[in-house]
Image (cartoon, rainbow, N blue to C red; front, side, top):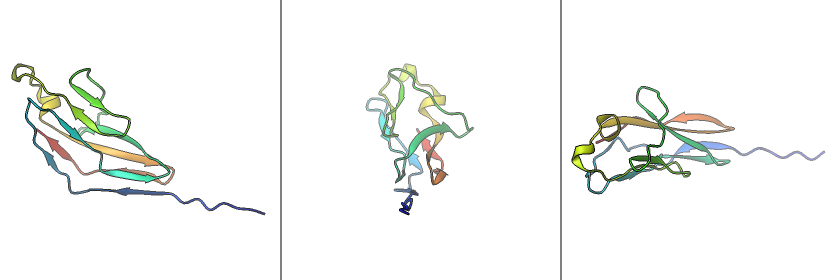
Length: 105
């Protein structure tokens, strides 16, 4: 009988990211600091627990789990997007982990 041992893991790559300060003229890219084997599903949430969604030209979550906040004119500032606390989760057959909060401003 042949059995294949399942090797699965789930871990943080950089758990020290706590704050991201960016300029409205440049925007920012924030990677989710988690990875795993087999590949993980990465999702971003507001600190309230609400899963975030793409807002075209304003906020986007890339397939690799990177959160992008696009450049914006000062008149388009929205504190729910541009000055808020986020966290990401990583999930695979090993389970699910949650990053610490990351304040983006």
